[in-house]
Length: 332
Ligand code: HEM
Ligand SMILES: *[C@@H]1O[C@H](CO)[C@@H](O)[C@H](O)[C@H]1NC(C)=O
Ligand SMILES: *[C@@H]1O[C@H](CO)[C@@H](O)[C@H](O)[C@H]1NC(C)=O
Ligand SMILES: *[C@@H]1O[C@H](CO)[C@@H](O)[C@H](O)[C@H]1NC(C)=O
View 1 (cartoon, rainbow, N blue to C red):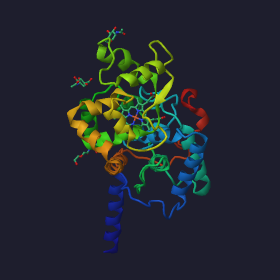
View 2: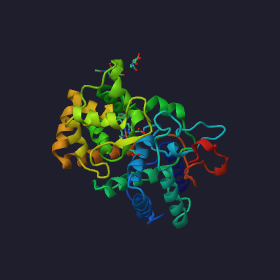
View 3: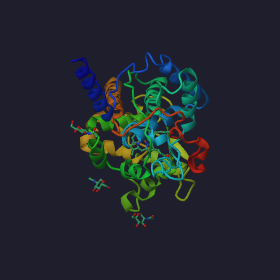
View 4: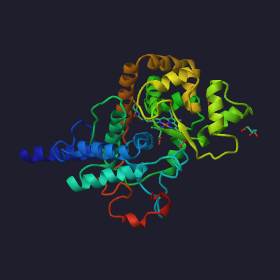
């Protein structure tokens, strides 16, 4: 009888190892009780050096989770055998603050080595970035494993362009079971941070190949953007994603209502009927925005890879591979 029970429990463990780990709050409460406070403290220090690192770190969760689930695949540097995600279309010359994630991981490896996954670090840090910027607080589910590989091709196929219109964004988000409301709320992450002229020059000078600017831009704001991003100018120059780029608030939505969205993928949310209702709702109620944003972030964090994983020692490389071996291009 006890043999059968032992066999059954073994079988149960084998089958649960094949399915993705179940995520839960307080996953590290015994194995690493300091985990969440260490992440917050290192992020706080990074923000004291550069406020924008909050936005940059928060964005990493989105780019990690949409490609094969939240598995830290984004953080792997390229190697001779593997072309990773860092140089993918939406990431190259754009994603930043990888070094903040490294600092968090190094601090965690001192207090509890080999325990906290890089995938979970991104989830905790994104929450803290929002909180430390004046946004809502919420409990994060943890227990993710880090991927053994990454795919530049998958990132190129999936990640949305700043040129996207609301209807294509709705279709994309639906593939991840994210609703129209989730799309609009999560886009509210652009309440903090910056983007390059590279991401908007087409809409300033040649929207949809018309040879004309996007008519939905407020004329005064367009004049300002034309000055920031002149035709043929330096496209690496950056501008603010909303008018309070260091504070996580609902100003982003008020800006959209006034035709002052920075990206086409932002302003389009006000232009399309299906999304406009939520832009209006969130512009009028910050608490509605915060509530929907938290729900969206939790759903985003629930996306899992289904592939086997590990707890990486360094977020940049799978275990057993010296970090020095990684290719220089992605080693920032
Ligand atoms: C809805 C589709 C989205 C599109 C098309 C989009 C696109 C972009 C683009 C083009 C940039 C600027 C890149 C550059 O010029 O270098 C950007 C920045 C940013 N994105 Fe998104 N994004 C989307 C959704 C999201 C979501 C869901 C999040 C987080 C949950 C997010 C977080 C951010 C943040 C925080 C920044 C500023 C980063 C910084 O200052 O370093 N975005 N996004
Ligand atoms: C939205 O963008 C997609 C993809 O670029 C395009 O096929 C579609 O026609 C656009 N829809 C509208 C209503 O503009
Ligand atoms: C979306 O939900 C359906 C039905 O619950 C599920 O089968 C599917 O795996 C989900 N897709 C994703 C990407 O989570
Ligand atoms: C605008 O875009 C269209 C289509 O992409 C292109 O054919 C045209 O040459 C562009 N015009 C200018 C002035 O760049």
